[in-house]
Length: 77
Image (cartoon, rainbow, N blue to C red; front, side, top):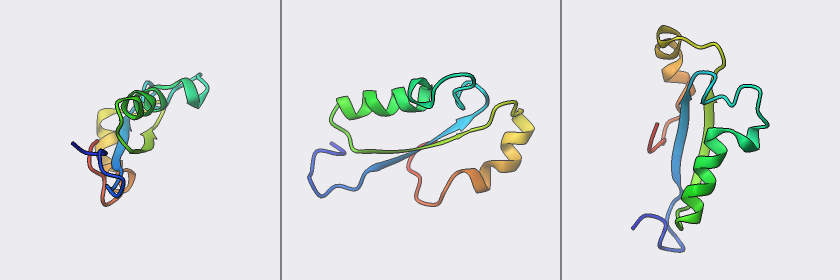
């Protein structure tokens, strides 16, 4: 299981999306990326979360920024 070894690399997740992912009008600690990270850590996983959400983004806008929003080495988007 990932995260079960003390020397395991953390799972790198990019939370990519629009206002809902960017925690629009919420404290960042209350947004979806932070809640997902806490839930996965509670399951015993080591997580690195990047919030790549942009408020007001569109599908085409997301596609245009995908290459620079998701860093190399990201495991999940």
